[in-house]
Length: 86
Image (cartoon, rainbow, N blue to C red; front, side):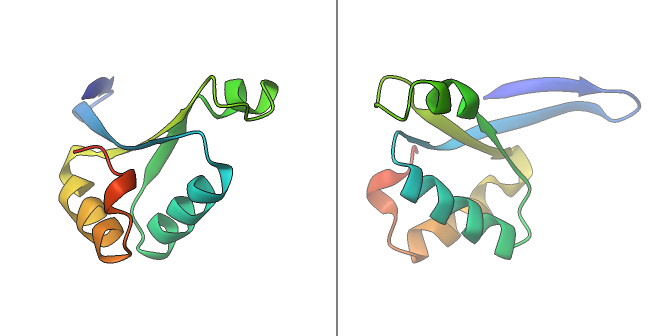
């Protein structure tokens, strides 16, 4: 889990749900989260792009702690169980 303090809002805690070197999987996960109206952040996207997605630098998809269960449930329902970090 990661945390960040926001002015007037306390600490926002996020959790990693997917770690991948597969750009197709990343695109699919982003589409599913967007369609479900779940806010997310992709960490390390630019490092992977610079390295031409060679697998050395996986990207991490993170969601807020309070959206974690919804995001994981939705991705499991889509058959992505093997791609999830639990």
